[in-house]
Length: 164
Length: 225
Image (tube, rainbow over all chains, first blue to last red; front, side, top):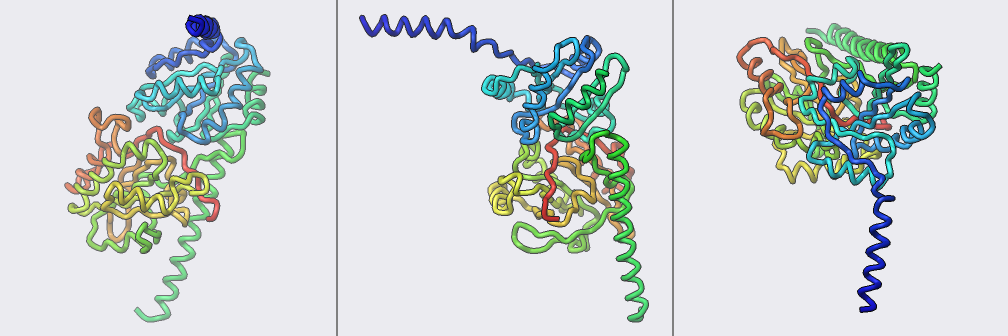
């Protein structure tokens, strides 16, 4: 009986703790049309789209830079979207990854397997290699594209430039 | 042809080769600066359809050197820049084997080239290339790119295919891009880009879709070249 009450207490503690760890966002799968609507409905001064994948070494190495940007700017100024190019069947793996790494930036999985049909619409100079990053400035209607690994210094400088 | 004119010809050829190479490099860096305020953009300006592709001499997993000129009876080639570690390369392994099985007998063998730096990806080391090729039963060469051939061709990611056709002793690029339109699921393929291109070349017809793009793994070029 004593052990049962112990178990009950443990249960209550775990249940109470649950909402705290449940803060992690749920990654949803979107198609290209939905990505286009994210872009067209954007309200932030600068929209940052980073194309990445959990298995992509340079991508995960640059994620902290994007996280820093998300934390340092208000949504009025900057909105970051981490767009996972993991295969659609790996959605769960992406979910686990962002929970483990406590990723706060918005994460979506782009499930649009006919790559040739949309890569040029993101940017005509994109070869399709990841990581790749797009910065879209609402005010000036300007777009910058980088097919490379970004560091926080470079990323911040570009965002500051677009904000001012 | 006498000895003197032969040596003049070879000197001219060497100068020509160096010229082409440095010209490409200048073009590539010029474009990178124009396209990006941040230096060192990884954009590479390689071959386009219609360009003449260079032959190479690269080490195969069996230790032997392989060149396109080793295939005098080939009508062309399916050059696949690919590697071990990349999920897209893995997803296409069986389809690359199928391409070689189908087209090598028709004069278009597959030549696979791994352009990645094994220092960055242990899975792409020479030993692991040998291992993967034997596990999968590769029936085609799987070469180590120790000479920057991937940069010269403009391989932008893995996998990245270049279909070449031999025309008057030259290797002309006829298609560049993805294998098909469904990396994730072979059962959902609706456009077989490489297959359609090679089928047309075999029939001496023009290639309809000459280049495509696909999501792929960026290439970590070797630091030792």
